[in-house]
Length: 172
Image 1 (spheres, one colour):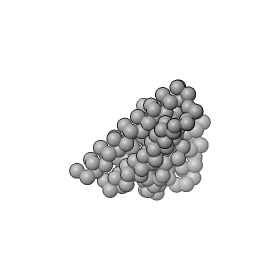
Image 2: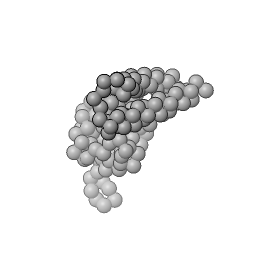
Image 3: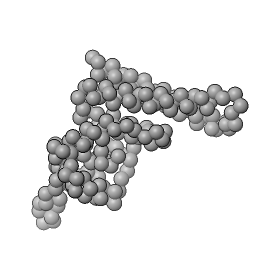
Image 4: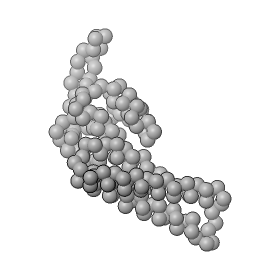
């Protein structure tokens, strides 16, 4: 997810590593909180793959500062990352799906519809699995597990409703 966030944040605006970190905290802290120890190697990896380029400038304080910018190849890779299938892991699904939805403004309307459809299908599968666990007659779920699964089921229901709204927006 860090590559997706960095590329998304660099679209059109060259930024320093500190600026990237700050923008991630401002826009995505509910889903992820990467450290400089995560961001720096990701920047190096993205630059080595020619998805971003860097240039060094002297700051007003006299310090050499690196600015990173997205390349055309990086823009294509960003769109590919947004469209990439999400995790089967229900814990990771929500944060990854929400980040992809935020970044979907980069996509054409038909690509957005494809993304929202894919996310909706995955959410429906997870919701169905949760419902099945709740519906089992001989379930050994404790009271607290039942409450947690019921809450999860409602979260997925709301998420699916949101995706349906986004899909309707793609049609109109």
